[in-house]
Length: 353
Image 1 (cartoon, rainbow, N blue to C red):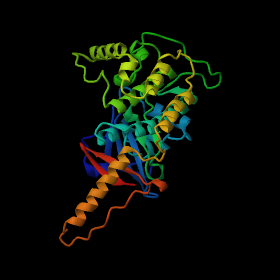
Image 2: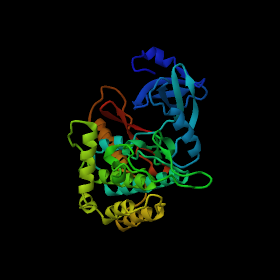
Image 3: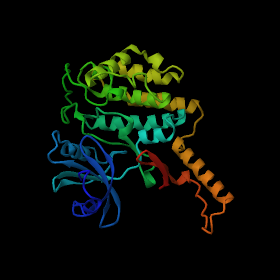
Image 4: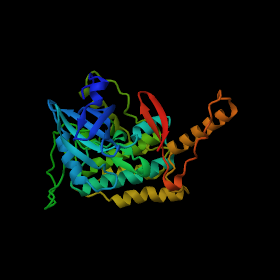
């Protein structure tokens, strides 16, 4: 729906014959994302709306990609795609907060344990997309979302509007090496070759993932916050800073595996198939060396527990004016109980699935 629409007209907007829009929960270059409810079973879903007058429509393309990727772990299920009023509409699984949301909630710093647990799933998601003959081309924290309910510890990869087929499905013939390409994706996490205008391939997704991991480790990257008069000049400054920052400097103070990961990705040839298992094992061995337990207790899980405990303590110590107090439930991690912060404007509410 257009952002100027009234809430009453929005609530009357039904797509796919049964999904009633409730409220806007996000937006992007393509349009808006809404929370909707199915009239058949009251299930909550996410609805992406794109104006049919959009200059660069991408929702039809994205829906086709989701169809190709269906069945993969950490790939949202598409319920319906079609046209409604003046919109292209994509109905899919409702997911939890993005890693960018969770990073902000955790004061923009993840522990090593959380980074390594995420790295394992992130590598696997990208590998699956590559095995389906596509590259994502916009790997960033905003495009990784945690699931909800019994899938709350599962990481999902979303937003395939910039994805590209890099090899033929039948023959496995790789696309040709080309130069003079415009930068596709997000400059902060773009590979050096993408900055240089070289056609992207599997190696670029993997390099971008390495920058995301270091962003989580450091809380920011050295090429963030650079000022320039134009977007083009800003991209050039980011590119220059990225190329002039040695991997060892970027990863200084963190386990050597992160520098090993990035050096490996930067050393891949254009058509080369990354050794995903080698990269996963780098971090899995480090995880074991640091004596961590793969218990799916992420930093945000811990924060929620602390908040719940503090709430219970405060409520016990205070008279609530006759209102009965119900103690907060302790998280049951063995059954996948999840605690995610919920983005609402600039405020992060907490709720339990």
